[in-house]
Image 1 (cartoon, one colour):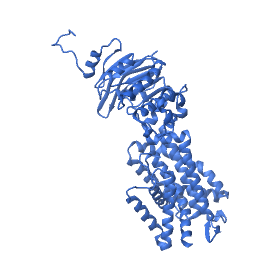
Image 2 (cartoon, rainbow over the protein chains, first blue to last red; image 1 turned 90 degrees about the vertical axis):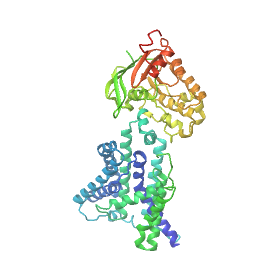
Image 3 (cartoon, each protein chain N blue to C red; image 1 turned 180 degrees about the vertical axis):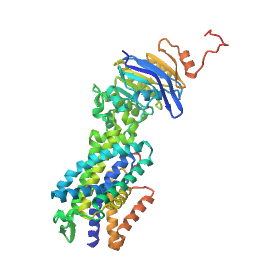
Image 4 (spheres, chains in turn green, purple; image 1 turned 45 degrees about the horizontal axis):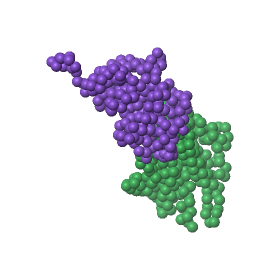
Amino acid sequence: MNWVNVLLQGVLLGGFYALLACGLSLMFGVMRIINLAHGDIAVIGAYLIWVLVNQTSIPPWLAALLVLPVMWVAGYAMYILLLERSRRAGMLVPLLTTFGLAIVIENVLLQVFSPDDHSLLSSTGTLATSSITFGGLSISVFGVLTLATAVIVLTSLQAFLSRTTSGRQMRATAEDPDVAELVGINARAVYARATAIAVAIAGLGGIFLAIRQTFDPSTGPTQLIFAFEAVVIGGFGSQWGTLLGGIVLGVAQVIGAQVNPQYFVLFGHIVFLAVLASPRGGLLSRRGSAL
Amino acid sequence: MSLLEVRAVDAEYGLLKAVRAVSLTLEEGETHALVGANGAGKTTLLRVIAGAHRPSAGSIVFDGIDITRIPAHKRVALGIALVPEGRRLFPGLTVAENLTVAGGHRRDGPWTVDRVLEIFPMLQHRRGQRAATLSGGEQQATAIGRALMCNPRLILLDEVSLGLAPRAVTGVYDSLRGLIGGGTTVILVEQDLGRALAVASRVTCMLHGEVVLEGTAAALSREQITAAYFGVRPSPGVGAGS
């Protein structure tokens, strides 16, 4: 029963990684940009919610609702002001830009919030600690909530891309931006919208980050690595692959921790490297299709 | 007033000058064939008109508006649509998605998915199929349909017969004839001189980026066009007998 429990904890943890990863995957799928500031953007979301909750004593879920549109606008501005210019200079420049952005974000957070760590754990009542016992298994309510949110976000994203005009335009632009312009699609607006969605979802990931653990200005890079590993394991550009990748990573980490508490991160990295070295690449990677 | 006026346009790729001082005037309803050897600058000229390539000099006036600085996606709303060379469909999108991808950004007009399927019956059963799985002729039909869905006043067709089986070419041209009869203004780039002359009312021949011959299809002889096509100039030694 113990190993079933381990597996379950891994799946729930995977939901969190999938939530962090899907914005990263979207930006890569649409624009071929790897956003190295993605983890730090999630941490910004965590800080914004923490500030709102502490200053106004509103519940965290309401704070999250207020923060998401702010993150959306910030993402839109990030594309127009930073990424668009760097895209014009070639493939590698956006990578450097987001690397620089990550450093700027970490240092601004350090300046404003000090290196002390914070958590929303105390503001969430019993939600973060309560669990359901079911046939000898202990299921964390918060873990289920995280996984459910990840599934809802990924399903919505999938539906948006395949059912709506705006989503179709995003897929078309991802496949051929030059021709997309020729059929009347404003590629620049599509890219800005994709960045806005990715940043807003990262912000949403930040809420779960703030509740499940403590965070400080240097938390971002670790989150980026886990998100990146989830995307690579699942296969770049596939929504369900991202969920699967997150779950595989989560399960690997929890199994590692079971073997020896120090092996938590190590086992995740090993699975990541094994997938990278395998001839197929990601588990659900599709060739010839961007999204 | 002319529908399209290209005024002394230059276009280049880095150091390579692909189009030099080209001027072109198109009346509404006209079908204009653009002929010339590979590398003559025909595709570049079409891309300049559609807004996919920015000219280094000259201007383009469409329906009285200077559109030289207007981006490609806004020119679609004004009524210019390009069927690019090599079809360039969105391979991961279905036929129906390829047709409706422009959404609300297109010009208002009569074209619907059903009407496109009516003039290209071979697409009837391919609606939900990914564009990458279509045959060449079907892909070309979808590419033309995608441009038509923008309800263009001017449609630019770049080598629509390239890489197609002769039967598929005939099918595409039969459908085009309906369009041309319907009053849409067309610029047609075509390697097959016979086909071009059969549908066009005016012909422009380009060589090394310049216009070397221009006239109505009826007034120009096939020999004149062929000579211009290959850059043969009457040499003084032979005399002006021909």
